[in-house]
Image (tube, rainbow, N blue to C red; front, side, top):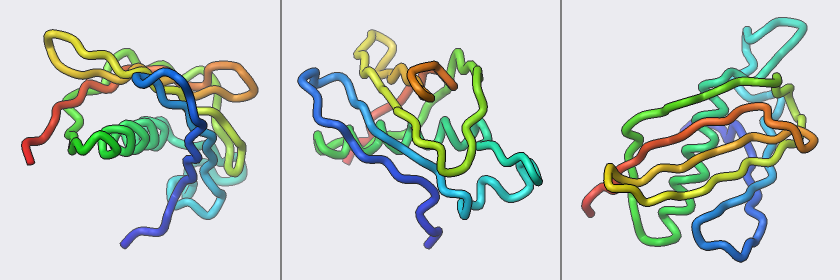
Amino acid sequence: MLPKWHTLECVPGDEPDRLTALATAPLASPWFDGHFPGQPILPGIAMIAMAFDAARGKEACEGNSIRLKSVKRVRFKKPVRPDEPFTLSLRREQKESGISYNFTILLEGEAACTGILNIELIAG
């Protein structure tokens, strides 16, 4: 089993289709190995994985298992450094084409990464 590479602490909210979590990725995370020596930043794929982990957790609370179908419109605007706290915000949308999660990673109130996760429910 892999060591925990990030923390996600959900913040209670009033909107059932929204999820907000406080998050960090510790310097000991394997994502920082070689990315980049002396100036470590969290790779974009790690931010996408963290957003998917949060969406998977939200769906699990509803009794659903999910699979990632696609990732769209991802924009990286600011680097995320080791142990730097940030906020992960997700909004679930049901569309004719399926379920999507719009996500934003905020550093001190500014967008560091945005994108859309398209998911499908796995029959259980």
